Image 1 (cartoon, one colour):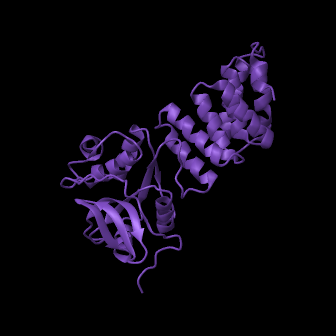
Image 2 (cartoon, one colour):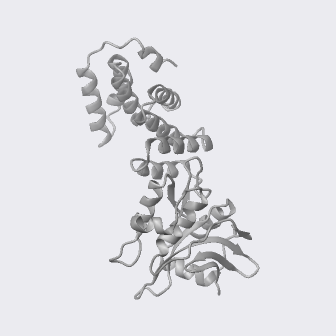
Image 3 (cartoon, helix red, strand yellow):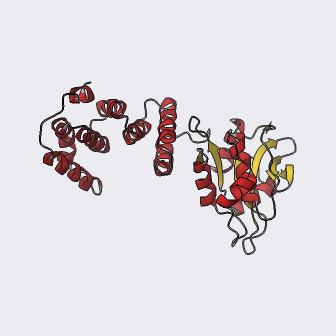
Length: 300
């Protein structure tokens, strides 16, 4: 029996997605240029070759594609959920970069392409692929080659947008937190703000937003987020630690001590306990005298 497309597969074709015909072995730069330019990045396949093409391998590896996306001030999101995630992104207007193995497991032929549509009547996937602007592949053939590529897929999003297929705020926040160190500070702040707008009642994006604001030097705004989170979840020990650290850096060791003490008393497991103890030790060394503006940072 032929494999069936998922239940959310609908007729769609993203006609406005650009096309960059690939040079020999350079499907990676061409596919990445396709998704980046679609989001407004001023680039092309030739400009991306030095960033992602590895001559010794005659191809590109996924980490290079992810890193180049971040350098272009876009956030790469690897899809989870296979074909259902693929069709969720297409329905939202997001082209999906996929890794296919056009050979067999023993003799792989790796290839990057961009999925831009689906025709349910003919069960064909529409791709920007190789030197073909509009390649149609039967669903079964596409799925088999994508399966051999371990269903690897990504979308590249501006920081003010989130992938449609990521519906769990905790999972999205974990992935965004792992990427944050590789993103410009302003991009990270915007991404967290966008996540918080989608899930205003979720603790993970609120915590991530506070951390990003603190890292960007926006301490008053970060303090407000930490206060809100601790009002909702007084036992959020990581938030207590980070808020106490912010207060210490602002010259408020007395206020910082009051924030960190419940975290110390809770005796959380390692490695968080060591982090909290280190923060508490630094606070004790700073004394107890608070600067005049500290009340503004701790006020409800």
